[in-house]
Length: 338
Image 1 (cartoon, one colour):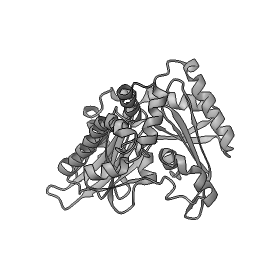
Image 2 (spheres, rainbow, N blue to C red):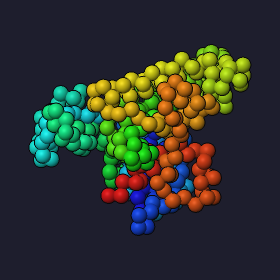
Image 3 (cartoon, rainbow, N blue to C red):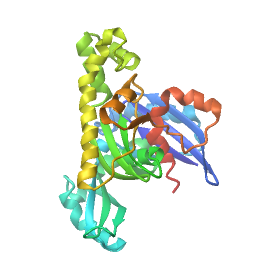
Image 4 (cartoon, rainbow, N blue to C red):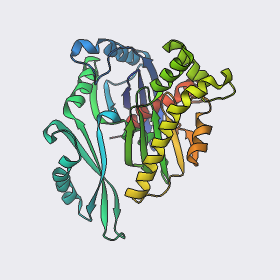
């Protein structure tokens, strides 16, 4: 068994998988909302109370078989860079990363947890080079996530960034794609090649910004604005197109950032043009979002299926359909299999 626990800023998602030969089988899945302090903003143990209670409820409702979970930290709170090295051996790269990391991480090395992964060996380029993915997170933040997990009666196994988990669940194995996770507070983008994260970036604009835009334009309270957003989205034929008109400036900003990420990958990392954009997160299902994004970027855009690599019985598939985009990170965590 393997359990992935995705603690977001407004919702908590859990996925439990079992493994039978080469098959990943869904055993349990659930999502619960909470309105308390997020992990990164909590100042002391009392601040976690609402969050801990929500996790306990989720554990109870999903009836998971273990208390060990893999967890993810937000991409916005971590530092991910691709570094180019000469064609060194693996031990030489490990040593070089220790020396090079300091210039890429905006916090003292002593306060960070650092990991690296070799993305690609380019032996035929001139000069030959190795692309290395450098991932770092504040040690204090990781300890916060481990702490809140422990308060909920769980043991944290692996800890990784949300985009690494997202890539594991959504990225196609034999192509280059853009993964876009549209959460409540941030939109995170990952370039993935052959199932491997090769570049990422995060912007502080996402679902909550859509809601604020609708509320300000229509003069309605937040709850109603959020309902309008999810019901009408970018449809110009609904509500006289007023919701679409309010959302469009925020949508355009996010679209331009996706284009910038693709351009950087192509120019600075000499990567090929992605063949698809795969959406995840709570705002992925906004009406007309897929069609508008396809038109704006010029490549295929789809809503990711977090259970594409998992065996799910038909009845459960129907139950999860409405919330499917929320489970991508939790599923990716559960798919670690280590």
